Length: 556
Figure (tube, one colour):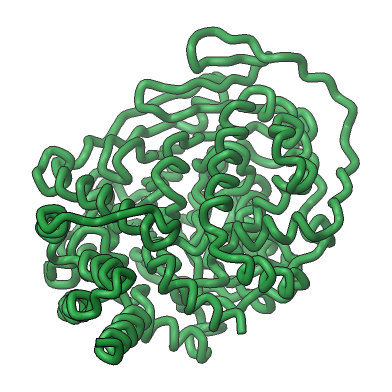
């Protein structure tokens, strides 16, 4: 029943929406309708107030938050869990409040109907108030400390701690609904004769799109906890889990979603598992031991890079099993399907490979890595920025089959042996990458920038300007389809929209849905037919377009 509803909604919302939004809507209603989560045991500590040094620069004892020249917020925090949480919240209170404003405003816009709201009420049993049972006390204390700096204006939804704890699971719920427009991440690791200096190097795109506004304030967090290892991670304010990170032992963690059934109850959010591994593991064996003892919401892959082991492996998790994939080679590629003996021949994994864009991106990375013998951070970045299909097929800009889908929240290049952590800045992964020295930063308690990787020349092309114009019109169309905002496109606007991204099936899919809502079924059908001639993201997209085309023919 839930999948039927989501299929219905996907027609209204459009496949371009990341299912994080559905997950987040689901969680907000869960929070609203369920009991309040009790605060954890919390140390009574006093951390004082921050001092403003300059515009966008605050300090509190040894801790600080500042915005650098590249537009990245850099934060350094040390102490025990309770101290860290309170300090984080005090330093970044405007940022965490702004992120929640973005979340809630999206909910106010995207809940389509009373029917949807009532339907969600039937499924609140998927999540319940025992979530803290699966979240380590240390994480709870840190989250509780941060929550004290959240705004009171959303207390009508739930108390602050209840809200932020559940926000950490929204990522997992979006991935659980991956049959409906989940975008996929791509990552790979190289070592030995595949890198110029023989060191292990990792590249990854975190294709997690919740709107342009959400990605504006990226937060680079350097943390020195009282227990475990110091580390750096890259995400957004208020999020204490890890999507991409590196610790001072030379161990890195990145996460990639895989196809998963709907969760049946509370478990540990995958980002908090990644955080635990980053903080407490220094080898692959230690990382695997932590992964095996935790039960997670959904299926996910964690790429673990280890200087001490001089290799990278994949830990593949489902709610019930843990698998490990070691390529036994100097190249390891990860998209969104499983490769270990534990999962590779399961029905759900075979279906995922056959029907999604995961295998296509995997093959494209394989093709690009085969074009040259050795790589360095710059050439790894060139792979992450690639927009073409296999054999240089033109996909159009923003196609989910591309390694660079032009929606990335962040992208990183990691050189664990040298303690280097390169992070994207602006324009998806097209802007400059800033390379930080983790060990120096922790030792000096001040961010140490080693060097930067140049911005992509694509930013200076007419094609990029056309893509930005395409995005603006696409947003107007989506607001019409989703929010019923008035829209009557002129012929010149339609021609420009097509001209700006004419090789993308999304262009014609959007126009087809626009004309369909206008009851112009001749034009809608023509657009869906045109979309079907382009390189489609997946088998699912093809079925959806064929269904829409059939509907147009029936309504003529």
